[in-house]
Structure formats: structure tokens, C-alpha cells
Image (cartoon, rainbow, N blue to C red):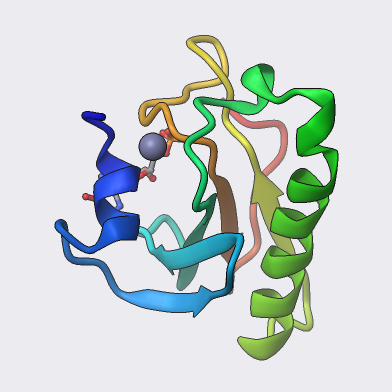
Length: 112
Ligand code: 5GP
Ligand code: ZN
């Protein structure tokens, strides 16, 4: 499959690993928007949050748990943001489900 994040997971495109387990892989975003900007992706190819089925419920929870663990490990005690851009209006540019973990500076709201 011609998927950028599947290639990153299998190692044919290099990345900077942050965390990994049997279900997920987390790596540094190539264009960081904050001092901490990590992408947490499932090893299984799922195109987006909109493509999740009932059997993905536990996996979705796991990805958020991983984001929280990385935030703790990186010392983001003042807070952070976990974001799943979904589809065209959501600003998704890579069609492999991913959680952005962004932190290390104050973040504005609402988003653009
Ligand atoms: P999206 O726009 O789909 O929510 O997020 C895609 C993210 O993937 C962007 O933040 C972008 O910087 C990141 N990205 C795109 N290509 C690469 C790459 O080759 N390596 C890494 N580490 N991140 C990438
Ligand atoms: Zn993929």
C-alpha cells in the first residue's frame, strides 16, 4: 500500500522514534509546531477516525493512552493538546490515522 505512515512504521522511510509497542508507533513530526510534536499511529492501517469500526474501540483508547504516557514522560506538566485531524475539513493530509501530541508552549483556541 502506498501509505507514508505505513512506510514509516515498517522502516523504509526513516523517522525519529519516541515510543512503540505491539499496537502503536510514535515518532517526531517532521515539521514540529511546538517544542513537543509527536505523532502516535496504529501499526494497523486505518485511514482516519471516520474509518474506525466498533472493533477499533480499544485501539482508539490505546492511542490516547500512549499520547498521555509520552506527555508524562516528556514532562508536559502545564498541559498539552491531543488532536486527530480527520478528513478534508479537519485538515488531514496523511490518510493513516494519527494522534498529534503537541505541547511545550501555550496553545491558542479556537483553531484556524
Ligand atoms: P495531518 O495534516 O494529516 O493531520 O498530519 C500529518 C503530519 O505528518 C503533519 O504534521 C506533517 O508534518 C507530518 N509529516 C508529513 N510527512 C512526514 C514525514 O515524512 N515524516 C514525519 N516524521 N512526519 C511527516
Ligand atoms: Zn498506512
